[in-house]
Image (cartoon, rainbow, N blue to C red; front, side):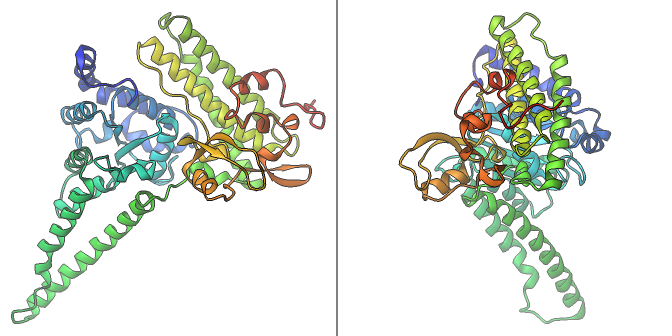
Length: 456
């Protein structure tokens, strides 16, 4: 995990301070608890307090984040103990306990929250136990990592406590037990044991060996109805986990804008505009206080430059065929700005800076959970090593075409990287995946091409 060993005086000091700061930090980060869901809905898609970037940044300080709304479910002392056990394990496991409601920025889905947070985390591998108000859920990135021998399987670890308690445990108890199971390295076995035990304990409801009387039949029917309802709930939860844990990697929520039509492009444009404002507000409050030296100052200036470049890309949209590429590029540049802000803050605080995120080369909307992959496009003799998400990497290993970002160019729909480099800064740099000078190129005017003059 980033800059975390769990041992030594510095770590001990962090743990002592963290216990008192867990809930206070969440309150400052996410705003007043009663308004948490409403605030999220009001700032849908932005990076206002409580956004994915800030949640990911908070998890660098402590692996447990609890909204004040759930302070009674997971008290400060228990949250601190869970955080300490995770840090001492050295595993990239995180606990997120935040309100998630229909109509908020996550569309009421904890999965969407976790995908967005992980996308902003800069971690190649991470595991999450989360509670958003309904049930304890787990997620593993990448999915394959959940089945490494002795590794962390948060998805199954989140399910097991419900079986163990016959679905009568409290959220706090289930979270605590889920973390314990996840860190045990035996989550799959413990999950299977818990499920078998649940089935064995509840089999007596269906014992018909004795005389059947009306009271018994009624009790049997009531028990059967309860079990069927529980089974349906379990089936939904298990299938949702299976979609992630059985080697099926889901793309981040931004993939809804892949190859956007006009309506979706309008929605994407609104989202980009809101995030530019939100990131700008955060930048206006950011400072190093003279700490971190020239390196921290340079990182903060880099964040300002990336934010300016994002604004230029957003402004350039709607002037021709490159609209989708410009809006996607603006999102990538905003991620660069957020990373550089996080780097400046870490350096000023004396922490190890996070790893810089790298977007999927084939389609930046697939997020930043990527790995360097050798890719030789079909029909080409040349190959290159580029960052690809799991789905795209799997496709190119099978010599198939990945799900590329398709843009309009010359009256035709093409994978963006097939546009001549001299005609597209996005193609020339792979949205920053091929070259590190994307921000500089945008600031010097490379968005302009002969067939694309700036608007008056």
